Image (cartoon, rainbow, N blue to C red; front, side, top):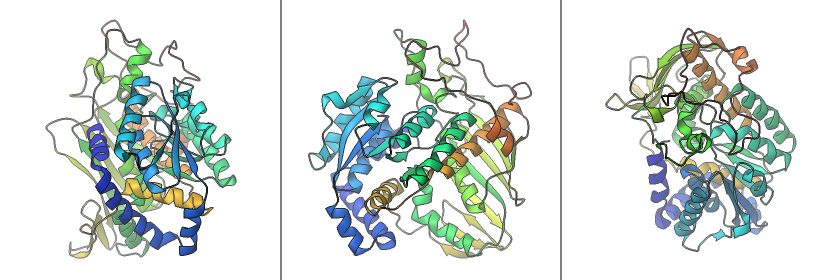
Length: 443
């Protein structure tokens, strides 16, 4: 999701639309997964304390959705690397609810800095993890060690070392019966669920190929300020540094790649591709590419062409399409067709509850009902799939699933501080090292 989109999302969740949307989402939820007795249990249960770790646009939106999902949730703690971002987020949440939700984040419970996350997590029953994704494995590990229920945004890591840490803690979370929802919200969207059901029922036969897209004009850039240290600059302009963001093939295109894995029903065996930076190559564009094209080959033989681009003035499409032995699916339009292109089902015109809200509704209902949602393993494997694609475009080589999973690539420093040297630094001209196909290698 772009930052502009996130801001619009928060603004759109004004008080009236919020109530309307929540009613629709909650109605769908209750009809499908919660009995009337369970609903009574939800209403009568204890207050759940909520902590927000990562107070940017997505974190603020997620906190609003969590507070919307359950009337007995209270926001009690917040954490961010930066004081101004925390203050802005808290003000936005308070103004959004106009006193109609429980928000009691005392001054002493507003934590700032790299170690702020643990102090906020300690005070909560449920935590929202929405910092830049490079920190997600460390924060998730701590939250699970403290027996917290978790909503965490995608991706859940930026390197294989982080993926392995999340996989390890996903297993522990299951054993502890903790709920973990990952923000791959298409899996909570009515249209995608209807399309997946058609695949399960064999309507289009076996999927043999697909195309997934995140082609857009790109996202925000935060220019370097004179007083900033290198660490503060990278933390403010985090989207353009791999240790924090993972490149846009991971940070945004993971949504479409995850749909491919979900609909095909397996994770790819290998990836090969190409990419580079043609138009987004200024001093404030860090080290990431502005386009990737990857061919994922699955164990079943299915091949998916994945493309993502952040370039202005070009063809735009955010979508997924799949071809089977008996028909095809166009996800954005919600169409299922036969081999002649005749429409068999159209779910695109049906009203869908906001999936960003639904995922929180389901999380809190599951907590109330002593259920277990276990998204972390898939979140980690979807993350690894996108990282495998990035490794393929950066190196120009074919990368297998096992190579990616077992790679010793570790981008995120242990316990960084404001005095730490970031993993990548610019040269005397302000330019960062850029991955070079044919030269960059992974082990």
